[in-house]
Length: 332
Length: 115
Image 1 (cartoon, chains in turn blue, brown):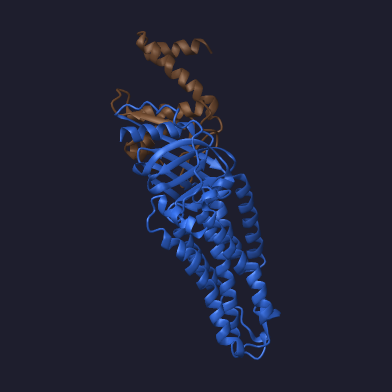
Image 2 (cartoon, rainbow over the protein chains, first blue to last red):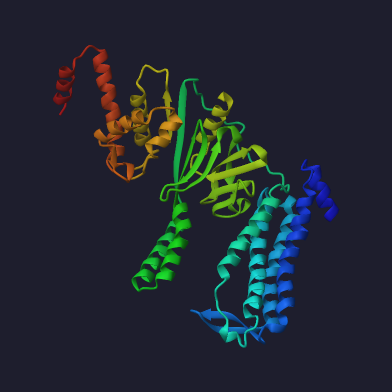
């Protein structure tokens, strides 16, 4: 199975991809296991019999034995995360292109969190008499580190070959827009994402209430959590001689700027959200080689880009930008 | 909405842009309340000066089709869909009448007679 995967990858014209699989399936999981294992081996003798696992405010109010913690974290976070990583990498040919990369990110992010919790728990309990003295600081760096290791995995997995797909519904048949040499054209469509707008509204309300009653930390946290929702709530696609841009209209955020020269083909597709990783802004052109903005199932614009990358966005009128972009590409 | 301009046309650029926006409003591609992209972004795509684009937007504001608010961008007015198609008709009437040799006073008289 391993040999098959490796020769498959190289056969697809990605010589040098074997080392990526080695790092993905060997080095990264080894790090996830070795770091907490080393910490446990070093501090096992100097931690109290129970370790704090839950805090209310800064006071610990829940605890577990070291063995209990290791078993729980391994079963809930580390093993499922690593299983997702290995499964995603080995099954990449049966998944849509780019999906293995997103699965690898999620898997290593979850496993990384587990590794951090174990490592940090034994480290912070070293030389303590009792779990009641444990302080609760230190989760934030673990989240950052886990995002980092997840992004590394996604980057390594981005060139894994995916299932062959046939994107075109009628892309090849759509005639290019007739555009004289002195003519310029711009296509613009604004999409709203009511579900995520609703979520953001609830978040804003919660933030307001928390700030009003003086829970400013929770309030600021709620506010920060609504920002991604707000930025995705209303989005505008613009296609013109410079390429395609995707921007949030509620916040000054530009999701994508794709140069015309990078677009190999534009086509009309029926977007299947699960094939692009779900709803909302999914993936990353730089890291995963695949990105999509999905508000619903149904018509969308698909761009096949240089370096085997792809981009999709759900819009109500994908025919016009497809015809425009194919005309602009032909004129360029 | 597809907005296009022909840089070699005898019709001025700002008139072409105003016409394109008006047609998009009349055709329902731009609905009331919808905000237009910032003038700079549209101007870059159309390869025109940003002032040319603003001039087109101002024409539509004077016709009651767009409202321009400082800091909030440019949005299609509630009355725009109804107005846009009649503005187009009025333009056609005036154009035809002028070509037919009528002067502006005569055109005004013509319209008033129908009211």
